[in-house]
Image (cartoon, rainbow, N blue to C red; front, side, top):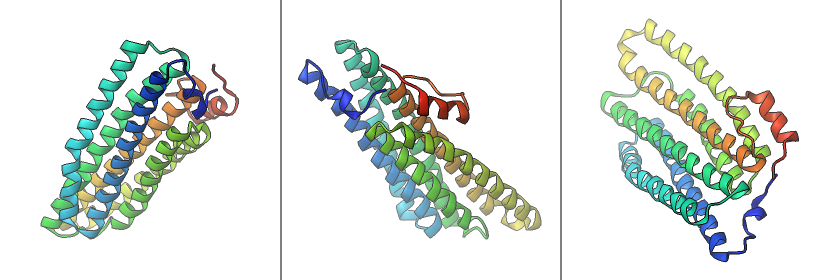
Length: 242
């Protein structure tokens, strides 16, 4: 098992600096994506088309950050040929930026729905669910990034476990909103916009879980994707890797 200090002791101080720099760039991208999620949800709930447009405009910056981090990872792989935990760090960063970019994409979709609702008029239902699930997935993204920053597999496990709660509440909200549309067909277009926003939030939770699984891989050296939560917990509580 490794921890944060494991990546600060190399013969080459330049290698230390390169690893720390690319990790800090990932976390900076994560902070921007986290803000994007927060602003997208706020824009939808508050019917703030200006804020929604700001979310959309951030997308290009996030895409560029993804490209820059990818290039950094390729350079490190080519020059340093890292092994063991250093290689896991680079792999985890290169995969995590994909999930962060996709979280940004889903936030942009929510922002588009916010603008659409500003034009069509508010939906009669769904804002309570957006606020509630939005708060949950924002916390998941924040804690997944915190786990990455601290090499905290226990916190990563809790993020992965919480994804089940978000999935369950999304399905409950979906059933209720579909029932409402059947009772009031005039609301279909506006309620559908909320449903698509909720779908994006559920996907953001999935991407946060993916990042959490990469943290567990980084710390314990085991790929826990597709293992299920019970096996994942076994790896975190009893797994070990050099």
